[in-house]
Length: 101
Image (cartoon, rainbow, N blue to C red):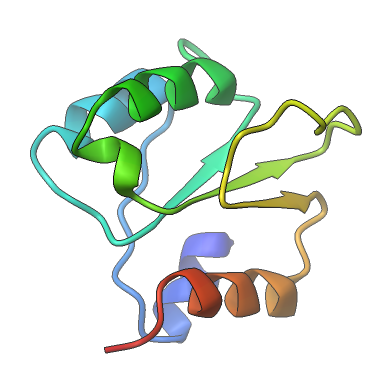
């Protein structure tokens, strides 16, 4: 649903089913922004963030964490959005972190 929303607003989107695949993809492609769910199989979002921030190249990519958890105090990200995701809030956050053009 989120990829459809973002495509509909002119964003190019790539999806990965877990954190390990996302890291593999990011070794090849440098995104403008990462949307990260904390709850993923194989490698969860917190572990992904540890890997991401330890990599000089990937650590600089703005990251928006999406979570249904109420325990968000220790999340290190540029923005944190609570699920269910409000489409307007998501689009506003993306535009702030990754302006068009």
